[in-house]
Length: 266
Image 1 (tube, rainbow, N blue to C red):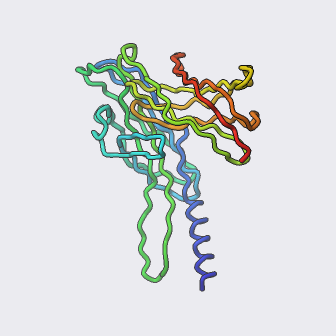
Image 2 (cartoon, one colour):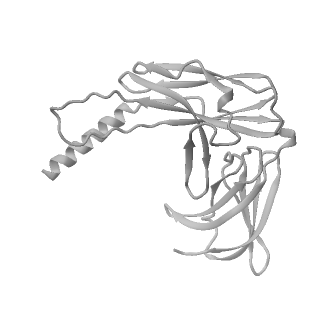
């Protein structure tokens, strides 16, 4: 009986995976430099890669995240810097046939009286809608997997008068898939979105010789949020080192911190 349940569960999960064929083709972050009273246009390209017709709904939410892993998708106006009221879409529900592509268009209408410089943002959620088809003749647990996308719509107003303010929150080394990964939590305490990179310069603790410079991938960081940046330092042998952490955004604004680093065998 247990074996039959497990086989049924595997079949349902595989079937659900085959049905989950909605993908967003043109990126999950759309950024605009905006001015008072102006209108900006964009689009979301969506494809149904599955073999069945699929309904998809689109709706706006506020969005935030922190380095402890929490992600907040909340109702509009939860965030004081929301731009949900500025955004209108040409539709909030589409039906895609198997293998079909389509485009959903949106407009951003910036208020005339906006005065506070900085980034305003929200997300357009793209979520498949599963048809509910009750069948009393079937017993057991039905499992449906739904993959939804959050597309950030970031609008920077009067950005010359705003700036990110990067701060280090945490530094730790963890082993992942046989690699030594330095994890650096960076917070943006400023009022402007940026895409920083975390770098570390490592020095011999006794001689001061520079042993290497290692970098993370650049990643977007919204105001008043934080996240971890990952740096592979597997080339550094186990030992204690002096190091300099540097967070640099795309405008070459930098924030540095001296740290002591211990790389262990385990």
